[in-house]
Amino acid sequence: MILLNRERNSVFQRFQEPLPCIFVKRYIAKLCDSVFCFEPGAMLLVENVKKAYREPNGEVLPILDVPRLAVEAGEQVVIRGRSGGGKTTLLNVISGLATPDSGKIVVQTTDVTRLSEAARDRFRARHIGFVFQTFNLLAGFSALENVLLGMTFTGQRHDHHRATELLQRVGLGQRLSHKPAALSVGEQQRVAVARALVNRPVLLLADEPTANIDPAHQQQVIDLLRDVCRAENVAMLLVTHSPEVSAQFDRVEHLEELNRVMAVVKH
Ligand SMILES: Nc1ncnc2c1ncn2[C@@H]1O[C@H](COP(=O)(O)OP(=O)(O)OP(=O)(O)O)[C@@H](O)[C@H]1O
Ligand SMILES: [Mg+2]
Image (tube, rainbow, N blue to C red; front, side, top):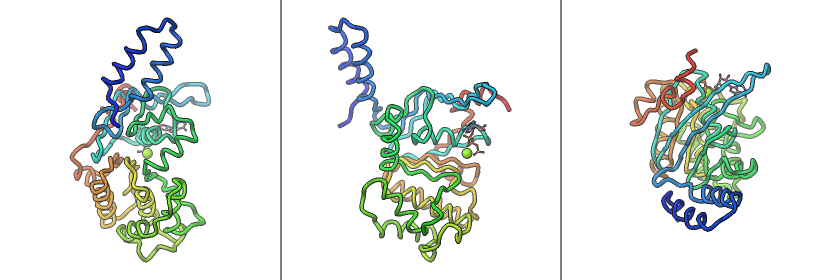
């Protein structure tokens, strides 16, 4: 069922008007916000998200102040911006790995900022694919097992066929039983790409997925990400420093324009 903002407003008004108590009104408003938080067409909606870190000396260091970012189902978006600008932090708060200080992050119809940590973990496992900048493969498991592990947390049956096919498509068909230590850095990154896609996510977050890969395999990884996302209508947010990669995408967002902190703080 698609729940629209205008429906939220009509329900909100109908229940609000007769209510005498301000606390009950606030409760109803919160309930409406959590149920009617879907924007038509948007698979991802980031609104007024702020994140700061507190330094050991007590100073507050603002990292993110993003008024709005919307990505439609199946849309493929590149994010560029200087090192330290907050790209990884933005992907972390979108995925629920980090919590913003304020703001709303809606994936499909769920505002992930309102979920408990355990619920966020379950939601991420089921709906979001993440290619980490640092891969995060488990050392004791083979390439194939690392990809299959992505399915364990969702309670699905392991789909060996899909996991193997994805690994073959990134050129690792002969490396299925190799553990991370026996893989090159670029090969590990390609395993991480396959793992992010194995659960058929609705949203894929890829943090510099080609940073450690030679040009030939770089194109293979980009082709895999784009083909799978197109075929399965996955919204993709891809961070890259590579002009060759970003030139292949229709929509390129610059962090300097998305993130007000970067407009204010000139390093
Ligand atoms: N846990 C933390 N505590 C304090 N500061 C942090 C923390 N995590 C990140 N930062 C700071 O937040 C800023 C943004 O970091 P982030 O990793 O998001 O940058 P980035 O744009 O991804 O950079 P790169 O392109 O180098 O990967 C950096 O200045 C970093 O030092
Ligand atoms: Mg980063």
